[in-house]
Structure formats: structure tokens, C-alpha cells
Image 1 (cartoon, rainbow, N blue to C red):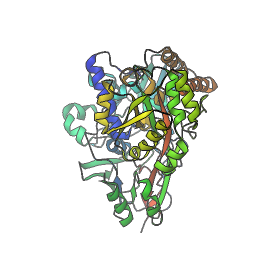
Image 2 (image 1 turned 90 degrees about the horizontal axis):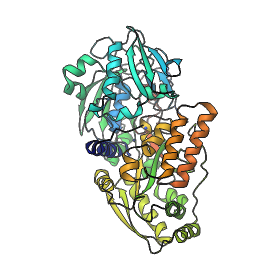
Image 3 (image 1 turned 180 degrees about the horizontal axis):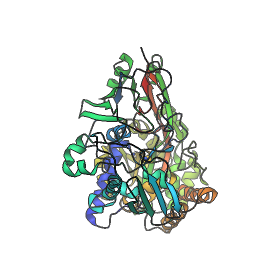
Image 4 (image 1 turned 45 degrees about the vertical axis):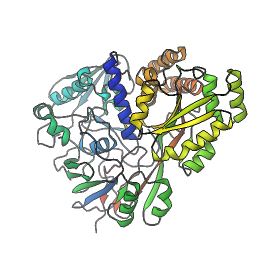
Length: 536
């Protein structure tokens, strides 16, 4: 994705947006964990057994509500997850399986030639206000995302699109700037909105949007809850299995655990690792491997971090087995590549870092580095706080004097964007937006705020080589495409301007006796698509 930051204001905006996503997604954040268990392939009736269609599903959500629901701008964990149930794109990516399926489109995009696709809308699709979905709404939805004046983050996910035009009342034509093999996956990042509603009362739409999904938002109160009703005129592949939903916003971990233990809610996300044994007796609990990672990032404009040997030394210094066992209670997988091992495009990188303090010391010596002293910038995310002291301990064991600089994400990224850091350790997960390697790599390694204003590696010859590989890969397919991605994985594993330390597991708890069809996710959030409450 090529971020539009040609002006200083654009650069500041992108920095703010990216930092906001870091805060909201535990990034908080799209992917993860392809291969995670889950049924939702986009087929109706995935809920198992009899369900009570009059029930209200109740959940405990770990993030508070911040900002609106407009799918062109929102990046918050809560709003993005809510929109899975309320909004639809021509295609969608299942939150559990990470598979693409036809949503507002009757079928997946039909390829006409190398740069031309057509999508026919499904019959009878209507918005929550009763208006029929038109091809004009589809064209408008794409154009508002692509318009630079709207400063939509999602424009960068579809910058391969040259035009979207209505062919007739039911079909749209999509022309790409060049051959691009991930069209079906990327169309899911644009949700179709009713033009008349957005243009007539944007504030009302942003607060409670009219979508085409199986549920309709009825209320959203920060610090309290979000409520949904079943949309009875839904015509898509995943009809609501309950009368409604209530999401209690419980940012306090103890409150979520109590709500689940007491039966106040039927499912909670982001179970604290230490509370997993407590909940296992009364609830189903599963930690699903995700793409979500903890990365280490260097200011490559600053010596000695312009030398890849120094960056490599920091990775060899770390005892990841100890860090994961002690700091994460085993709920992570040490990185052996940019992707986790369960991702369908996984390739073990040419350089895999193991705990080798002597090699780390030798790399520093080879680079002429002595008596190195650093500030290790970290966010105040709870689980990051558990591992940061262990990282400090391992770095000091190879002679790197380390001072921890812990703070809220927004403030820490403000310092980073001003160049005021040495090394940063922070969480990240763009997999909520998509699962393909191109999207996941370009989030951090594209020609954008990360490479320009954060780790500042965009003027390195190896960066240019990486862009070439990524550009070639999206125009290739099959084994050729995978080989190009493999070369990219190898390059970043060797250069490590920013690179994962581990990919974490996401723990979810739910009442397996009350919820039919529920699956824990490899991304932030809870999905109740195809989920029902068992009949009493």
C-alpha cells in the first residue's frame, strides 16, 4: 500500500492514523492466524443445533468505544468488530478462518482480463433504512475511499484500483492499474454505504450507520455498551441467528473475567493470561495463534543502528523461550519468519534468531561497537510490560546498558516520529484488515510513515530491493508469487530494521453450552456471525 504522504500535513496525518491504529488494535491492527479453528466460510446455518431466535447474545469487549463507525475512517478495535456484523463489502474475509467469500457480491469477482473484473450484486440487497443497494452506491463507496481529500487509511489497501464503474443496475466493473492477483481479498476492505444517507446526514451515519449486514446498530454508548437488533430483511449468506446482541464495554480485565464467571455475558475477548486457569472450569477457553506480534524497531538514521550487524545482535541476545514462558505464560510463538508458522504463506526465513549471546557480542565487536547505552522505548500495554524487563535483562547480558522508557502508545509514537528514540519494542497487528502477505508486509515495509518517519530505512538499497520484490509478487501467482514473497521474508529477516520477536496467542472465553457455532478468533474482537444461543 502506497501511503499518500507527499505533504508535511499528509505525513503528520498518517503518523497520527498509524499511531491511532496501534492504540486501538493492540497494535492493539489486519493476520493473522490463518489456520485457526473456525467454521464461518460465509455459509448460512453454521450454528450447530437448535437455536433460540428470540435470544440476545451478550459479550464482554476489552476496548472502549472511541470515534464513529464510518467504515471509511474507523480503525478502532470495537468499531471494526461491530462493522463485521453491520456492514458488508462486495467480498468479506471471515474473522475466524480468514477466508474470502462473496458478501454483497453474488459471487467472487469475475476476471474478464488481466486488469478487468466484474461483480454482480446479490438479489434483493437492501440497507438497514430500507433503501435498495444500487451500483451507484458501490461506485460512491469506492470513490469516497480513494478520494485523497477524505484521507482514508483504506485507500492504501486498494491503491491498485484504477476505476470502479456501473455496467448496469446490478453489475459493476473494476479496472486495475496493473495485474493484481489479490483483488477478491482487498475488495473486502471497502464497505458499501448508502450514498443518500451519508451525504444527507453524515454525523448520524457515523454514529449509527445504515449497512447491509445481518445486524443493525441500535445504540452505542462509550463506557457502557453497544446494542444490535437482527435485520430481518437481510438477504446475504450469514443471517443473524439471534434477535440481537449486547456488547458490554469492559476495558478492565477483572471486570471481564467476573462478567464471564458470573454468567453476565456469554463470551469475552482478551482473557488475561493469568486468569485462563480460573475460567477453564466453567467456560470454554482457547488461545488462538494470531499474526499479532511484538516487534523490535531501530532508528536506522542513528549510529550504530544503521549497521545490520548491530540490529542482528539485539535479536541473538534475546532468550525468546524464557521471555515467552515467563512473560507470556507460554502464549506466543517465537518468530521464525515474518509470518507465524500456521499462516498458509509461511516460509521459514533464511535467518532464524536463536539465543546466542556470544554471537551477539561478536557482531557488536565486528561492527566496532563498545559500551553501547540505549533507551528501550516500549508501550504500556499490560503484556508488553511483562516482557520488557526480560528483554532489558538479556540486552544488558551482552553489555548493552538499557534504560526502559515506558509510556502510552500515542506519546511514545510522537517521540518516535520526531526521531527521538534508539530502539522500540511494541505490539502490532494489521491482520484485522486482511490476511495476504502483501498487505501485512506493506503495512510496515511499504513506502509509508513506518519506513520514512519511524525506522527510517527507506533510503537503503535493500529497501528498494524489497519494494521491487513486493511489486513483482502481487502481479505473479502460484509458486512464482510464493517464491517472491519468500525472498522478501528472507531479506527482512536479514536486515531487521523492524522485525517480530514473537507472534502472540489471543485467548477467548465463552459459554460452550449456551453458544452454538461460536469460534475464537485469531484477530482482535469477537464474531457472532452464524452464532446462536441454544434453545432453553
